[in-house]
Image 1 (cartoon, rainbow, N blue to C red):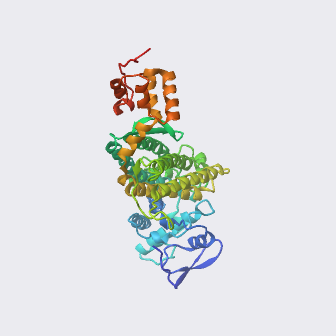
Image 2 (cartoon, helix red, strand yellow):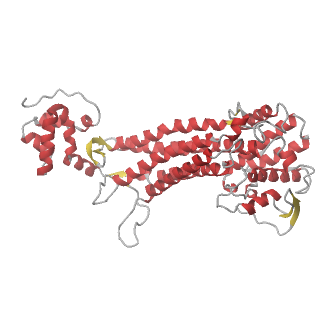
Length: 478
């Protein structure tokens, strides 16, 4: 929701000078400068509620630690905590209008949070916005912190919560594939390798295969997300902890653990951790793996549903919209297609994250903002894609059972099932003759008296072609 800014203003000042800030804005002069300096994208902080909430959580942890060290008054601490809790309840999110992509290694975002929390705290204390002598964005809300520890800590917490949300959407999609696997378990079809006929399988095995390769990625996502639980709070500017008092870092981590219920840990080397963004590199890579598999699955769905008369036509995808402005009756696989495009975007975002991670210099990585934006965006895209693919495609897929069965009977690929019994030479002979004459493998085996009809039917039973079996069958001649 966009905030309607007041024409009335209040005067605020910073290092650069004085500026008029809209009277009804909770943010202040540094946020205003960030808005003006970074008109880069449509990815605004206000669109990422879990990141905003993580910023509030980070500031709560700092305030509690500072109070325990007697660095904030009880009144200031209570007001800061109340302001942060309001943000956790979903309030004031429109007051975070800054672009996610920004220079300054996240300073604009950190100050946006500091200013909103400080001004709301002032109101709760009975003061006017901008009366920072009573509660300052820098001296109180940002006490014992730097952007270089508060900002990445918020990113870590926000992305971990995003990960938990992603897993829920992912799990429901996987279950949808499993249901189709069960529903199609009895339908025999041809498997294919290199887009050529291979050997028989069931349509259920196809969909269970989709579910299985996606399920494998849950543990990879979880493994990568664990790195988010290690933070550098207390590092301040470069990891030396300058401006923070002894015990602050430990007290802040303890507070964050209590607030979130998460197993948050302090990095063992704060200097190393402050310039290291490999947790985002790792999680983005894990999402890329998911995207690669989603792309393969959606390509398969489009091929399996191709036609309806001149393609494979083994399954029917739900018809969602007319497919052409010129060709009557055409319906396109628009839902798998949009998931394909989401996959490409996630893969592209991962390249951006990788290059940005490599760009760390000395004691800081100034490219963290675009890394965070890419990770949050990729997760959102995947979640939206999962839900769209599931509800508008997978759940409504039906099978063309007769088409699947006909293709198996007509396929030369079934000769592979005969290979262990009749031998490679005979199998090759039958396959070649079938190709040249157009006759079926079944017909030719009987014509050449290689097997009895009873034995041939046993070998070609669906249940004997889709898993390892031991059959006591002999050739009619040796």
